[in-house]
Length: 405
Image (cartoon, helix red, strand yellow):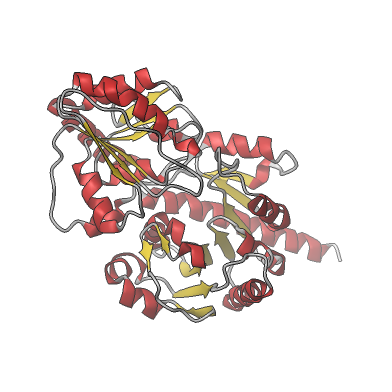
């Protein structure tokens, strides 16, 4: 089976590990779409490096810029291609020309299936040119997060979704949400498959570090839906119960967002804030030093932060929203609390902090979870079945059409 996996830098933390497993089972052609706003995203950071506009070979580029990732994960890909947008506008003739070139390139590969890792405005306008190819689209957020509504992205979905044959959600809760949000889409076209632990960031560990048993990490872009205000409310309660607690907030704010005022903490407690882009070296350091990772989201689909924490063997506390609970073994790999409840959040966090026995138990449970279900081989196995069933369905339709002539 020949598969094009079409992704973007913001998903390369999951896409790279997934591609490594998928390439063992299919002829995999990886396409990475790069836009001006995504040159510094997730594991991908190329700064001001100039790239030629359009469709270019990506194998040499990735081998040179990300040698550890290429050798460990991408060497088995049949091809690696970059689709480079240097125009900052998604609605612009230059953008449309690059998109047209990208879609024409995909057709020259003659794939059995194309899997889009999300469809954005830059990509959406050319989807109709692929109408004869079975298309799968991952939908990471069926409903936009609070404070991050975007009419351009909604328009992109309206334009592209009629041509998609399978919509892939990453939890059963989000599958149901998607069907409710788009009632005209047949449930037969909507499937789900979980994601797996992001082990990839271990490549940036320079010196192994131990946590001090008293560090809470809030990681990721700062946005209204992330609930950092709830953690700030919980912090004084945590500090009263755990001496010298560290509350680390690390992430770049979205436009217009301002952190709440941080209260003073008693008993030697303190906040540490890194409100900027977090590079991979610092990320690896922060997660190694964390005792527990807090995700007090007000609303959510799933969370790469949870899966990054698992990659470092760290327990998490999440809210009972979206698909988050489906990624937790309650009180074994983490805790599930009600959204907005700072009392329950502080209680769960304190049950881990300064308790070495519980910390060791959760680490063992996380390793077990990664072995039995939260791994990329399982993800690839199930997605290949989805591709195969779709391909068989589309071939059956063509055969029935031919017989009717």
